[in-house]
Image (cartoon, rainbow, N blue to C red; front, side, top):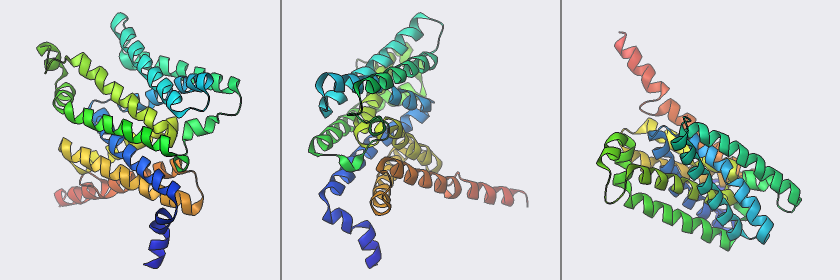
Length: 294
């Protein structure tokens, strides 16, 4: 019991930077994982990965203009992500390409541009820090940014729950009806993608642009193995993501491993446990198959 305390509780009681990291990671978890459920529900799982790369040039431009200003880089990433979403939507409406194809083309271009801009500026802004994050290095401003964006995201999802639900399950009806509390289906779609961008921008400081999408998607996929109802999936995904954040930070501190990948590794373990033990997992399927073959 004492060993468990020394491993899992004492570091957070002793070190302020660990407490900040835990609050930031849990805030991001509670905000981004439910969005992952919506993405999987809408069969847009790879959109998060694409948009996570799209914020990179905005972060680089923010750094080039204002230096190591977290708020400037976050604003640049937010603008870049929204521009990519708008361009993908415009291309899909004016050409024969679907939105996922146009988004793939744009995000690859954005990723290349971001790497070039960061490389040209020199090594003051570490590319690995942008791609993989450093939640253990979150300061007061970084914590305020993550917590603020997470609060906005969760509040917006709650207010637009009905619209998101209808647009996800019956987009044709949403389009034909034209309005739901003053919002069309296209507006709800763009609003939803904006929330995804906000969470990815919040995640670049803590998890990095590559790892942030893992916090969004892995708990969401795991939650769908445990529950059939959407509210239960939303709550389960947030809980799994928060648990992964805590476990990942503990192992990152104790074993001296990178914090972002450690959190995603913890989420991966929870995912494989869900694959085996959940009601829709391999173990239950094997039991049912054996029962019906008797």
